[in-house]
Image 1 (cartoon, rainbow, N blue to C red):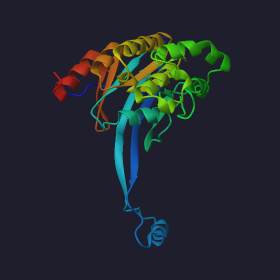
Image 2: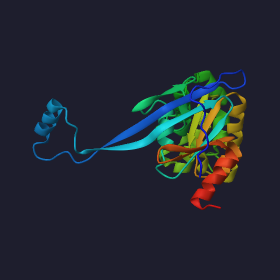
Image 3: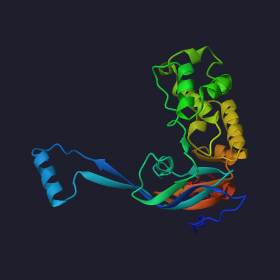
Image 4: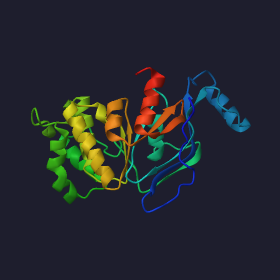
Length: 268
């Protein structure tokens, strides 16, 4: 299958198409440290430092390989691909949480990666975490107070009891993910990145989440969504980037890319 053309490396800036994220030939390499505690390890390490030799117990994993694309205001971009294809790694690099081995990432404002910017604490109540998460995203205390009820209602965690007053360690993983999404979605973002959040909860919560993503797009934001749920991608995104083995296999309109991906994986 022929690869679709990716965005030009140097985008054209117009009133209608304003770049929010530019990823330029980015490579990301993980260094996996093996067992290095053999006898004489410190002496051997010093010898390698002096002689500038590499550590034989460190294995390099090339997770993202020369990825280039441009995202624009108002776009909702799905990231699809098999497990280990580099989707989450790429989002973390765009958020500034992973350094690139080479290449550059340019962003308009500070991207918000769902589940990271809302740094919630298990020993605190849901109520306190709403405040903490809002402050972590740069909201004022007044903004948090004004939006508090909407955040709790959106999450739906109080539908079967007063869970918002309980410590988050008592929540299921789905409840915690819904609360994180609700906090993140309460603020307008120039760039919001969501990693599998829509896979949690029932269909009613997923529909609310998809509607909120559309609202964020209308408010001139850019949304990235990593998901294995092709229906959520189709319902939410107007563009899809398909990653395999750390490279872009295809980048284009949602139906075209998702259809090719389903054919490739045998899902059709």
